[in-house]
Length: 230
Image (cartoon, rainbow, N blue to C red):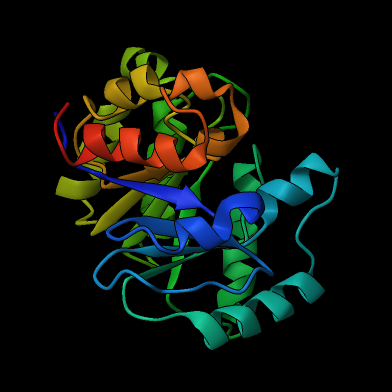
């Protein structure tokens, strides 16, 4: 199996307990202030674009200005700062990153490749986006559009990741919103050429999906799969 990082998003209810857990990577969405307990692990600072999409809103110039200040304030080594994308809108996402660099905002950002509809992908479209974004960065996200690990395998998503790693020399690929239960995590880590993934499912889903009674136990069970090989 592919050895990857599983990134645990901020969880308000259990955050004080999660902060004490050693050796895990974290994700914090704008404007939540991050913390950096685990040296050498990645911390993802998310643009908040997905949350806006759930509200029927999109990233504006004002949001970009605030996001620029947020990244400049908190970014450190091993931090991925997510570009101001738009969920299920690859053209707008490409326009946003162009606007971002045109305005000389924080330069070390992580591009986001988007599908245009839920649960389907067009590899040619995704490769086109990868080519475009490689002019700006060597760190990427794939915005998971409802795919399970099995679906991602069926759509041959590994071909995209292989192309990005071998042809474009991309240094890091993160899958946003993947690993919805223990079985799905196992399915995703059969896919090669990507480096990390995250999901809020560890604290949002039925706890039986992760074998624990609460998010803390779920983190332990996930880490056993990711780092223990179980």
